[in-house]
Image (cartoon, one colour):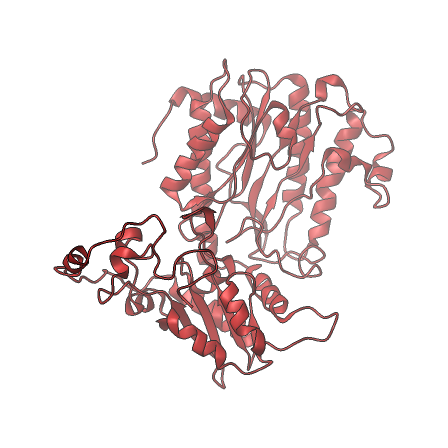
Length: 493
């Protein structure tokens, strides 16, 4: 399972342009190495992962569950993208290494969990210095025992996985497919076949994990708050170098935030959206090759992914010159009112869809005040019409957690058509976007885009805005921007 993959990598982990080493060199490299252990200790959050595995076990009694994390993906030739573990795998193990596979096998009263992993490269072979997986190339990997100590989870060498999969009970196995081609192929004879028209078995496993993620425990909420606090610092960093009187590139601002994300967390949680001027009207603008212009707005949708992969997702709109124009403020205030109405409506038992309708009605009313709606607000809000959505294409928000769009495999009746529960974390992010080519709006509105997004925890008494460290009202934004500019640039630290 560990060598001879289908990505073109030679079976010994070397590359075609690597030199042919003489035997004298190879012999010399095999000598004189001191062995040392990593100073590992049980991770304090390991019990949280164990509880999640136990809950998943209870949902599938008597069945074997196989959850791979995935492999490194080729960026170009022999270079790979930075590896980010599969979210479901990381949610159940806390492990961040590539190629690992979690196997839960029934034991009569539950499941025995085993983490199959690529252990430390042995000094008994040349892998440690010749293979691109060797520690002189990529750093010291954990031994089986070290990993087990950290995660509180039994481990086994990845080379034994194939035999384990070959020993599975036919029709009693579920595997999350699409993460590891070799695991998919190895498990196919044993996972059974559903009746035509029914969902595949791994779909049911994916649903179960997604719906388990809906409720965040105290540790997860702390992880999200840490990521959000780092995101606040990242927005401050950007505001401090944003000039009021001259243009700077969107990519400069993207890079300043990315520095904070890499310093204070794992990375950015998603491709940062930095939309200056009319780029703010493009919902997923990630090219970021434009530039700010005095007098225009700057929309930034960015989030830090923390060390344990929980991510923030925050959007703010800044007036580059420091002050909103009267028309910019009018649009901004409509979006703020929509977001505030949505946040105020959040509490356990409220339908997700009702939060959406609450936000959308305020936007529709604002569009009517701007003279843009071709029909009444009630007619526009009718599901047979929805014409107001010409200027606000997306919904009010989404679940947030170890993925920026968390719980994405949850059933519609549990998520989009479901009700909010205590411990849910979701974004509230209404927006209005007037495209530069839209001839149904006045010329002065064309190219204006506003979205305000915050990360909200559902509590027993209502909503807690976890990203309240950033201003939201127009007046607060102007004051905050002036304060950041006065404070001046800073380095993370």
